[in-house]
Image (cartoon, rainbow, N blue to C red; front, side, top):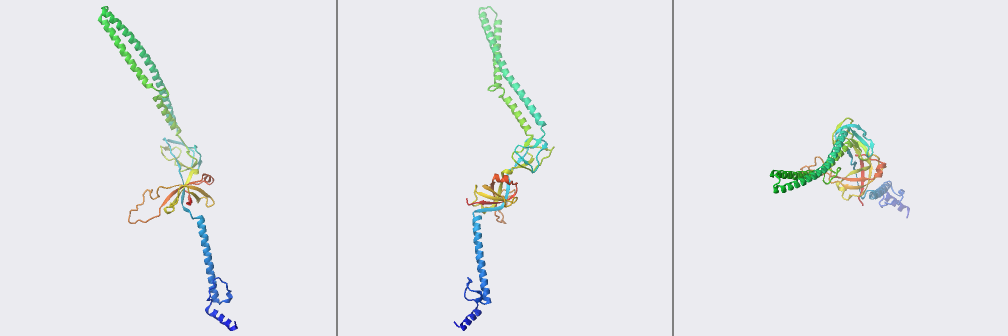
Length: 371
């Protein structure tokens, strides 16, 4: 190729620019004009940007498949617990309060003490009534013996009077005694027979009071014992103890206060037995089942502490369904709102011991629905 042909080629490049596609950039930029160089550089940048975006998209897809596919998550989750309410079972004045808010207590620790003078007097009265009932029942058993002796005595009297009557009847038949004497003997005989019947009735009544029992199992003694048990129980109820291990909250009682049965004095929150109520959208619950594992993060400890748990169950209704004033959807201005259902998640007790949670704390929950 001569010098003229080279000039023509160069002129053609300068005139038309870079007409032939060179998207791989295999040619040198020095072989092209300024405009062609700009186009080539721009094309290379676009190709690099597209390739980078594709790689990022693939990486993001892979990350989503590894970490998010097969999971449902929500940050609308809160710590809950079945708290123990401390309420008195008897009325009385508060003598001593031994627990305050935020204080840790153990099962059986004394929380509140009531004035027990009335309860002690009631117990003493019940014990006296029991002793009196025992003595009365013992008298019932003694009366049975007395009544039996009376029956024997009346039986002997009847035998004697019958014998006397029969002897006088023989004498009257011979005319030896007067009819008046025979009538008197007959009257004595009839009276002895009536006395025997009366004695038998008294014996039956006495036996009825003690039949099938002894002194301790007699109904009167048993009732008196029950009264003693109630009085002793009321005395024990003057001391209110912690039913579970936990932390005291919502103390509402003061020394000297007069309280009635059922009044809320304080609450004990069992920190070792808390759970999480995670409110998932209704569209997320299609594959959620009881027993599936869950990972939870608390705002209190941050992402450095991960709690593990399992789904216990799904609530029986949405929050709006159990609201004090339920939503009236049968109206003309109805707007559909995505509903949420609470999912109960039980936590690992060992993790709770290491990092205790408090009722009401915010949590982020993620449930593995692949299993």
